[in-house]
Structures are given as structure tokens and as C-alpha cells.
Length: 527
Image 1 (tube, rainbow, N blue to C red):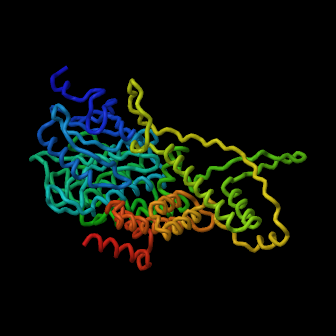
Image 2: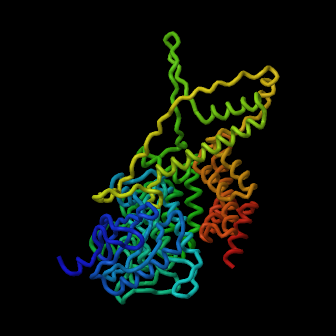
Image 3: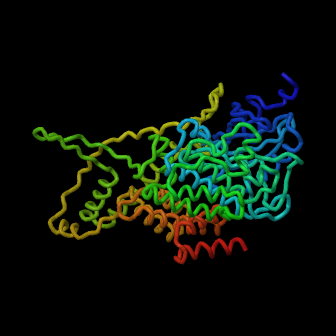
């Protein structure tokens, strides 16, 4: 073993805020290790430069750390810290995502159902739109926008149903050329834009070209340019010689516009592309969120057109050869029970019961989200004495056990029953409308953090009382208002604030009050 190899971290060594547990992956310029951060009781990933890497890589490490640490977005793998090991090797401490890469998903499944492909690209476009428009400072110089320059299936990883863009190793501002040696074109050749693979300058439209390649591969199951020989590959990229997509015209048109040879003919902004992909996704999957569509695919191996609802089967009732099975939805029964209790015992008792129900709902929601989460920033268990290899497969969700409970409720009087017939029923607790109403109430009580959690819960919950598209828009608007209060109080970042209002801008039609408010708020914060 060489002296250089001995300089690399070993199990038990301290790097950053954690202790090395195991090696996750090794590449030409860096290795990635899994660490355990004892004070926070969680795992993280640490990217360490290889000892034999050239000086240019060391400089890129510093730039990658400075850029990625400023990108705080749900669809981007976050960086937390930068430093050097005891052997003076640069490292970046990052969020650990225990999920599959898009590359491994495509290797396993081949072509993906169109709603799933659109859901994945939707998430990456959200990340790209955010990165292309962020204001930040790099090496004491104000900058606007970051180009990724290496968008490919291997750089997309899933945290549950959330696709995350990672590896900003060759990212840079659009106006600055950093760390590129003469004759060395950074990136992955089969995924380069025509202007880049021939030694030209990258721009934001080069990233959009790579989005087109990503969508093409998700739909077809194969790379747009699968050539293995260098000359034929470059010729195919320069001429756009690829196999036509077998898909609907709207999807093919989006891919075609992304992959125009002339950058001026492509989508000029990630937001323009995002709007078209979002509209097509909602047309293909009107009742599902993008996250829900991806989760359903991982759980069932196919796309779905209806929201996933967890239901409890009641004991079947058999009557003279006819077997009647009834389906009990606990949350609806509880809501109806509370209404009856209110009529019987008065409104004060009803309010107390509803508060208890909301508290229980929030607690169970937090428990479910923690159990389902595959992001290492969630609380984790301490490591065993002998660290285990990194698990990259998406673990199946545990099926919740259902316990049947009978509640005895006094029968209402005839007067109460008559009143009950004319009473408009409240939305059940597992309805998006319930969480939207709850979020607005919490916001009016100046509880923005709790309100934000309720609006985000509404985004993941179907509704029987309003169209799915309407509940999504109301949830996004409520989340933006909550983020505004939190931002004004200094309790959330500018990135979260801007991302929330961009989502509102994309969700509402031009000319609506919500769309106009989103434009105004984004303009005010960027001036």
C-alpha cells in the first residue's frame, strides 16, 4: 500500500463533525465516506479529495464547497462544511441520502412511465431554476446564478419520492470561467451540449440541453447518444443524430426544444421549461403530486392516476350467502364522532376534542415522516461497533398496523338529529382542505412554523371536497405566506422564501392576485 493511500481516512478517523464509518464510493478525484455525528445523532457523507489528484481538483473542491453551501433547496443535496483532513486533504461534509440514483433506477426498470419521468424532471428543474436565479457572493464578488454543467442520471439521487441534484464539482457562475485547463473540457461527454463538447463556452441553455437528455433517457430507457467511440459520439451530438422518441407530441416537443442545436432556440430559462413540464405532468397525473407519483412507482413498480390512500378493512358481514365487505376510514369516523359529540355535549367540548385530534394527527404525521425519511439529516440510530456497508436500495415502507377502536357515543335527541341534518360537515382530518383550513388558522394566530407544517401536509394529502389542483395551489400559497413571516422573523433563509414564492408563481395563472403577489415579492427581494 502506497504512502498516498495511507493518507486517506480510515474507519474511526475524525473528519469534520463526525467519525468515519465506511467507504461509500471511490472515483478518480475523490472518495465519499459515511460518517457518524455523535452530538447530533445522525449520519453524513464526506467527500475527500484523492491524494494523487492535481492542484486543479483542490481548487475545485473549495469552489464546490462555497457554491453548494449557498444552495439550500429541497431538490439539491446540501453541503454543510469544508476543511482539510489531518493529511491536508480537502473535504466537503454533506447531507447523506440513502437512496437510489436515477442511473440505477433506469438500469433496473428501463423506460419509465411518462408521469414518473415528468415527476423526476420536474424536481430537477425546480432545483435548476433555483440555482440559475440565486444571488450570492463567490470569492468576494456578487454573482447571480450557478450553472451545474454535469446533469445526468448518475447525479440525481432519490430521498423517498424527492429527486435531488448532486455533485456541483464543476459548477460555476455563468459570467466567470473557473478551474478549466486548456484542452480539458469538464463534464461527461455523452451528456454535453454541442457547444460544450467542441470546446465552446457553457451557459444556462447548456444545462437546459442536459435536462432534455435526462427526460429523453427517462422516457426511452436509453441514452440519447449511446455511442461508445469518441468520434461517432461527437458527430452524433453535433448533428443531433438520435433515435426519435416514441411518446406523445407534447412530450416530444419539450424534449426537442431542450435539445435544439442552437442554444438560442432552446428554452431560455429553466422556469420556461418548468412551466411546460409542470402543465404536462398535471395533465397526465391530475390527482397526484410529483413526489407521490415517484413514491407510488418505487412501491408498485408502475405509475398511478389516483392518490395512494391507506385504508383499513373491517370485518366482513355475511348474510345468507351474500358477503358484504365494508371499508372503514378511521379519520372520517373520528370526525363524524366529534360532530355528534359536539351536538350532544356542546361546542366547548367539541373544540377540546378537535384540538386533541389535531395534536394526535400532527404527532402521527411526524412519526410517519421520520420513519419514511431516507435523508440522513433525520435522527438516526448510533452505529454498531462494526460499521456496515452503505445501503443504497430504497427500503420498503413498513405497513402500519391498524387497531380497531369502538367509541360509545350517546344517541342525539330528535331535535339534535334534525339540526344535524342541516349542518354542513367539516372536512375529515385526512383531507387536504382540513390541513389548509388549519394552516390558515395557525397563520392568523402568528404561528408560522406550525402553519407551514400544516400546509406542507396538505400538499401530500388528497381531498374529497375540492379538486386536487385547487388544493395544491392553496397549499403552495399558504406555504409561501408562512415562509414570508418566518423570513421576516429571521427563522428561515432567503432561499426558502424565494423558492416558496416561485412555486406560487408557477402554480397560478398570470393575472391572478396570487401570481402578481409572487412576482412582486420576488422582485422586491432581488432588488
